[in-house]
Amino acid sequence: MTAVITALICLLFPALLILLCQNSRLLDKIGVVVLAFGTGIALSAGLDLPQLIGAETLTGVQTQLSEIAIALALPLLVFSIDVKHSLNMAGDTMKSMAVALFSVMLISACGAFLFQHKLDHIWQIAGMSVGAYTGGGPNMAAIKTAIEADQEIFVTMTTYDILLSALYLMFVMTLAKPIFSLLLRPFESSGVHEDSHHDHKFAHLADETANSYKTLTQVKTLPQTLLALVVSAVCVGAAVAIASLFPQSMSSAVTIISITSLGLAASFIPYVRQLANSFQLGMYLILVFCFTMGTMTDTSIITNLNLDLFAYIGFILIGSLMLQALICKLLKIDIDTFLITSSAAIMSVPFIPVIAGALKNREIIIPGFAAAIAGYVIGNYLGVAVAYATRSLVGG
Image 1 (cartoon, rainbow, N blue to C red):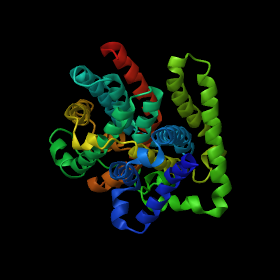
Image 2: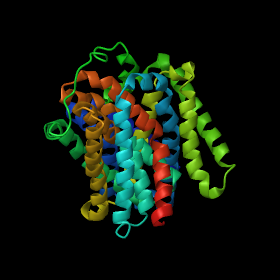
Image 3: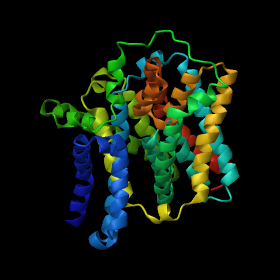
Image 4: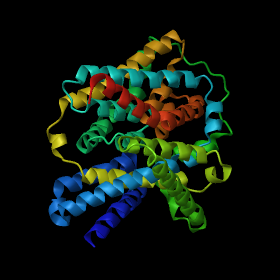
């Protein structure tokens, strides 16, 4: 009974956070995802949860719920994405995005060599970092499951990632353009994407406010929402069946890659792509995952800062940004395209309008969306590949 109550709290608490954000502009600006993770950490710090619930029961609920939530979320997040349309809209932006992805992968691998004697499980850290900074938080979580990464390392990385990504966002929105304009050519408007009638295809991805979750409460779309969940569950079940055909050592990686691939394949079916609220439901499950992971946090990781891990993540952010800028200079890519694709890799889809607004360039929103979607779609593949490549080179 205790396990059921604990699971219900983890499932429903994000809904309370959404309601609070819908009624508070300040909380909404902080973001529901950050609040979900932060509240979980606060509960872990302020209450002795293992004593209240029981250590074995708590661990079981946390582990199972986090794994189920991320598995179901992955297909739901890609169902509504029109991948073909996104690639067609991207144009030359994809060249810059490819540079961004390459930069993150190379710098992560180089960092693994530099920090291999300072950080345990460096190959896991490298793989999860690539997932986080080519796609986003869901990719990092998926890769964590795929490579069976150490739980403590993942939670610590998530905490540091929130802090450093916030600093990165502030830099891109303020000082980055004046600084990198000394190296890169200015943006030249073509008018192709301005006031594009395709904006509606990305509206559900761009809305990062708590109001975006209101559609989940609409009775008229409830059957489609439930059907999206069922289709996601079918993808997960099929992925588990596929993974059972492989050796146990490969099971987790095959499962996550299969879930991603099946979800992506389903997005090409018009009926599945048009199911209402699939993306919002996927994001709600991400909130459940974040809150649950937050309750698993050992707060000593904040009070006792792991300087080496913090430095490694910072090295990736700064190093990949600098390398991408140098390559973009050689390829004659403009400053705005460079910054929007870097942001697409580091910050993911919802932040594209924020960055475009800071750059005062609405034309780059649509290609920015397309670039971010591409990063999200292939982030799991890149992260798993870098993780195992790094392990083969520097050892486990």
